Image 1 (cartoon, rainbow, N blue to C red):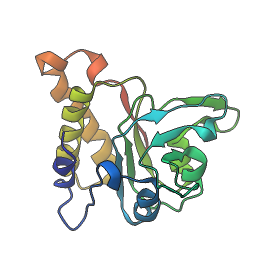
Image 2 (image 1 turned 180 degrees about the vertical axis):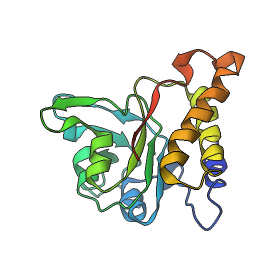
Image 3 (image 1 turned 120 degrees about the vertical axis):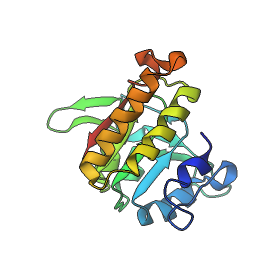
Length: 183
């Protein structure tokens, strides 16, 4: 899945693709509040001892201590996001520490606190090739449904069914790791 294939699902004026050095923590912090869908295809690091230090790896900004390339859950929580959906296409982004009264504290929780209505996260280490196909199918299916609630859930369901019918990726390891949390 190329980033541009996902961007095409939204149109040229509705998306911004950041790759390599452009995908900095600083760019994320400034752009993310302006988009209704946020897709991060990067590495995730879960810290179950101190879940607010769980982070996504982005490009750091040299000479800027606040933009060290580690987008931490604590930093995400302090953002003002208005996204309908955040897709965390990285390994084990659904993981976190279970806290009484809070549930699982981790990256998806941080996006909720920041104002995101739903997250699509992974429960285990994911395969890049199968995830690319799953995400491409997810966004194609999502574009065809008018209702936000039905759109996300149904798009994931149809994408999983498509993967099941693909002999190479029919095993649940390749598609069942992603879960939709929220609306």
